[in-house]
Amino acid sequence: MGKGEQTRQVILDEAFSLASCIGVGGLSIGVLADRTHMSKSGLFAHFGSKEELQLAVLRESQQRFAEVVVRPALRLPRGLARLHAIVVNWLDWTKTCNLPGGCVINAAAAEFDDQPGPLRDEVRNALLALNRTLAETVAKAVATGELRSDTDVEQFVFELNGIYQVTQQSRRLFNDPDADRRALAAFDRLVRDYAVIHAKE
Amino acid sequence: MGKGEQTRQVILDEAFSLASCIGVGGLSIGVLADRTHMSKSGLFAHFGSKEELQLAVLRESQQRFAEVVVRPALRLPRGLARLHAIVVNWLDWTKTCNLPGGCVINAAAAEFDDQPGPLRDEVRNALLALNRTLAETVAKAVATGELRSDTDVEQFVFELNGIYQVTQQSRRLFNDPDADRRALAAFDRLVRDYAVIHAKE
DNA sequence: TTCCTTATAGAACGATCGTTCGTTTGTGTC
DNA sequence: GACACAAACGAACGATCGTTCTATAAGGAA
Image 1 (cartoon, each protein chain N blue to C red):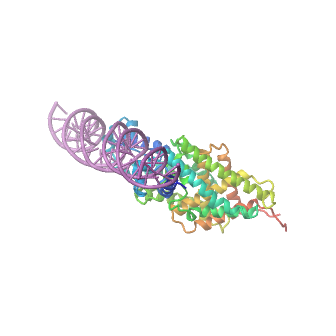
Image 2: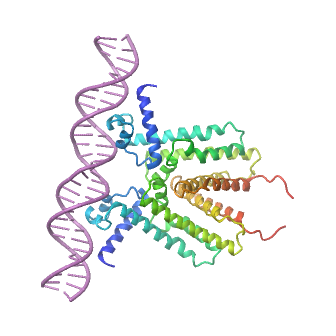
Image 3: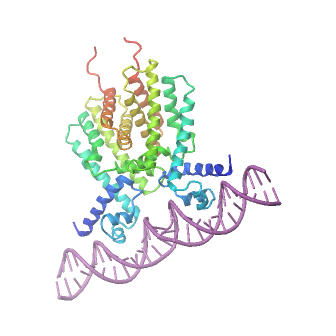
């Protein structure tokens, strides 16, 4: 890895955790230059524009998410076991990665949902891809016979997203110590309602 | 109402709908002055600081929320009917009010959850108050015998918040035409799971 | 070492930020 | 109409924003 790639990665690391706290929109070249002990122009040259820097941060976030949340779960057998692993990794990934201020993309989703442009597109595509992954995982749990065959997969994913978002808010804004427990309880209720009934009595 | 109060309200109206699109943190005195056809200093004098303006917007949002979401529902009998009304009003209130870019406070929650200060406190208190209202409403549905007596009220409210947040995201970021339907389906599933079983067979 | 490329620094640009100040305009009261 | 007070303006402040330019320093291949 050349010198350029190397420092670019250092910048991205810093931008990543900074954006976690103040949002992708709140990133500033000057502040980032200070934190990395570089000149503004030197840092700027690596990206060409502020927007490109922001996009790079969003792509970095996607990459780490795939490595930390999705990939480890792929080693488990398809079905509920894998789905459960993804959900747990998902809920914990802000702790696993260097995300002192919560998921970058999720915050960016609320920030840019009304501002058309490349940033909104990037966020949108990232979350659409995540939903697709979740949908496939749920569909496999239907295929294995663990979830009912008439399961509304899209609805299932919809509700999963709700659980994730309220958990983030409860943790970050309310400092609710029960957030994780409640999230898992909501997930259990979701799975139970869609689960195949094995025995009648 | 004196002249001062009058223009202050004009400013707040504009700031309110602007903040809906770009966030409370993205508000700027200059832009707001242009939109209201005032000078920066003239507008500034009404609030004394930018932060005070932002706080005023958040308080304005709380007031409108109470009028549009909670109050109309209080005319319905306590219990599931009232809870249902609140949820429906809640999901629709960005359409009812002048909120082209979604709920101001909810966006601010994601924006300030990592930045200590008066703004975070205001958002936090607003959402805590909402959760308290929701909890009381759910508790009354338990009291009327419509929901099971062992209902975990906090869990119920937790999941309600999840439904609200994912609905906002689905509508604003994904332009999902099914968002409202899915939200109501999730709410129905929530109520059904906690409802008292009337007949056994 | 030599040479070319890449990476970083430094200074400056125009724009916008929130804020302050002094002045002018407007409103309401005696 | 005169007066007191509130409201709005216009100009300017220092700071920071993203960006551009030119020049210096470092890196890597021959």
